[in-house]
Figure 1 (cartoon, rainbow, N blue to C red):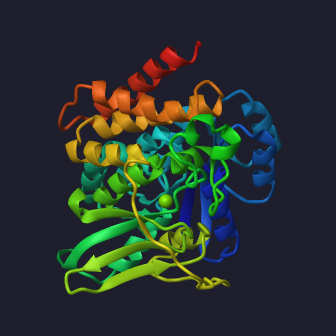
Figure 2: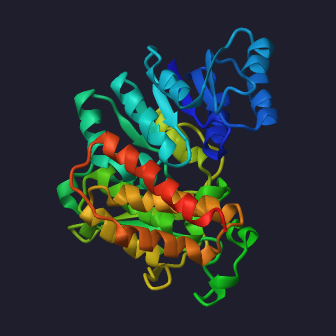
Figure 3: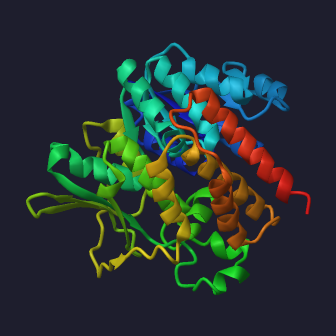
Length: 378
Ligand code: MG
């Protein structure tokens, strides 16, 4: 039996992870989960599974939970996430939190010797160098759950990194891919949340529409696979059937294809190195590929520049984007203002090299606070 922890169990990836566990109850033992503020959903989750520890987003309803589920140990807030991550039972921690909040618990889990199945790409965007160092130091495993990175990991399996000419991450183009830049000024929240291929949380769906998601994924791939940015390409592929391709030096291209179901990369990480049975294969139809359009998606171009410069800039870009997306989802700014805020914030920031974990976390807080104060009051 493998012990499993899930941070963000009530989110999209978290719920699909619970489904994978439910279908494989003889393989996995759920130890701890963290939940958000949707109490109805939380109760439903807790009524249907057995778990030792639960961390709630905040402590407002802690007493209700404790009286309803007397066998479970409850924590709350950021400190609760750390307690969950540090709990002294070994296992795999699935980090399915959204945003920069995922970084500290990842670090805590690594330091307590847990393997990480990472859906929280912000962890690597903000602190990839530090996290990789810790993974080595504490001799734990880091498995990607992002679909593109899972695909690339599968293709790379058994290959030498020195044989790789380049890796290619595919991008569907998101909900607004058929609109011109002029048309983007009129876009509503509802338009931007209609992703053509994937059912995902709100934040990542907006990030797909701005292509910021692909930018974060390029930086994530750089840290996961140890490849320079010159060897990481992106391509428009609207069917989301091919998730990643690798060009080898001998002229061969290997690709990984599957239906768009996150349970596949989740199960690959949790079962690794085994494969679990899955009922569906892709119906192969016409596949289309187009070169990436960096003029149409300026945030992807920015992510390459930011990734190459490193230091605090990836944190700044990520923080600016995270708060801008929140403001957009709260109807405080327009769709195109997301881009403007991110680009301006990055351009105005005075970068430093080799930041500490504390500097990274402080910068994330500072940038989000600054942008919130500027735009929220209008
Ligand atoms: Mg992805």
